[in-house]
Image (cartoon, rainbow over all chains, first blue to last red; front, side, top):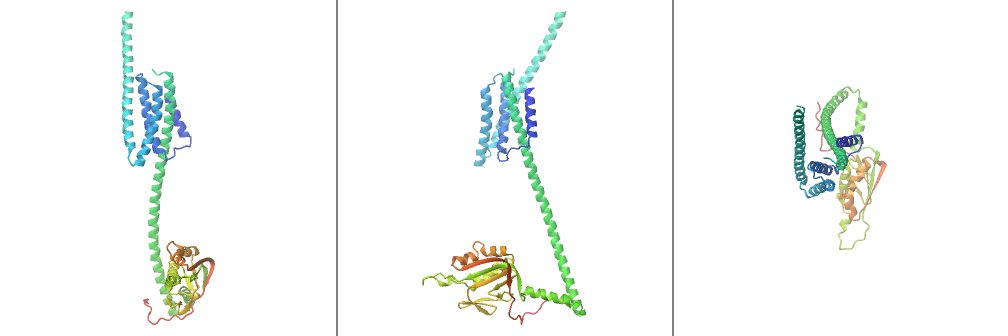
Length: 128
Length: 242
């Protein structure tokens, strides 16, 4: 699928270029990545539940990433490990969203299976 | 179920995310490996240090042994009277180290002079003149900075030299001197100068009381020999002759 290609392309490009993330912002980029991952999975689960909203997705993506980076920065200045709480929240939501996606995929698969067996019995009835 | 708009948006977003994630992983791996290299380097240096220390101990043992051998040979030469040349060069060496010869080399020349500031009667005049303790401090600083030969107004400082004040003058090697005092020292000019100029040091202190204190570095400082007679009446050699 297109998304898979996009992911591979991104990774290959990053490996190929001799560029690194400046170590000063490295820790903030790390937490922003977790936030973005959570938002993307949230968006995907919204697609499966037919409630995808483009604006909410984009604003959530950029907003969460920036907000988490800012929170971690403030936490560092205050001497409080805020990044720990951010990690807990995001990973929790990642698990929840993956569960929703898994549910819908399995449901679809089972519906397809049910439809196929339903068609088979119908055909056998007709040919009789 | 996935309309095209969502698909394309997702693809773009996932592209950027995977790009960033890969960059981040690259950076973290690089930082960790460089930290690891630093630890390895520290371990290496520690090992080298221990090796060098062991070597130093070995060399000291060798030096001790060589000195013992030297003494033995010297004793034999004395008895056989064959190597008087070695002996006389030995004596020459000791004369230089004892300050009994003229020497030259890189070093500094320090000039001290009393303050010419006019002070009224209410101030303590003694703070504005040079004391024997000041000269002793300068000599001490120079020695601790590695000076190998020091002289004050031409008087070579040797092991038995005194620096004492008698009234308004200073006595060195039983000779009287008055300011200006010219102190010469042979050693590493930069180190000698630095030792005098340290913060809170003798130069700062004397300059505070307006005493002239000038330091001139030179590649060729000449210091004369000790002119007096060295004669020990009380101290006798304690070297064991074996």
